[in-house]
Length: 78
Image 1: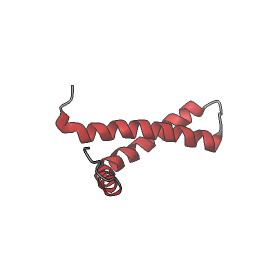
Image 2: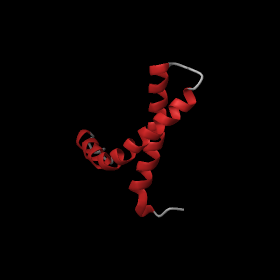
Image 3: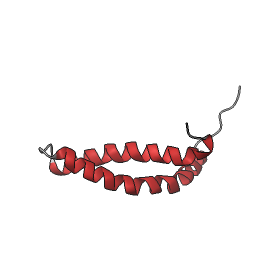
Image 4: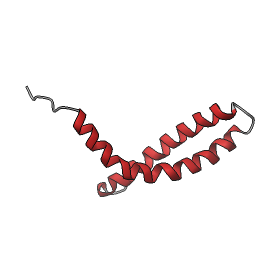
């Protein structure tokens, strides 16, 4: 298992993997339709999307956490 001290990297990896896979598939189908080589096109797009998504999520996630904290209020403990 991986140490909890690597939480940010592991979180970013899995978030980027899933989001880039889902989004690249949706965008590939939207752009070219369900053609015979859609899997090949999608995997190429996914590889590129992941290379962009992983560092982006790693850098942007602390900003997102701060924004979420600004828009949410603390629940009272009663």
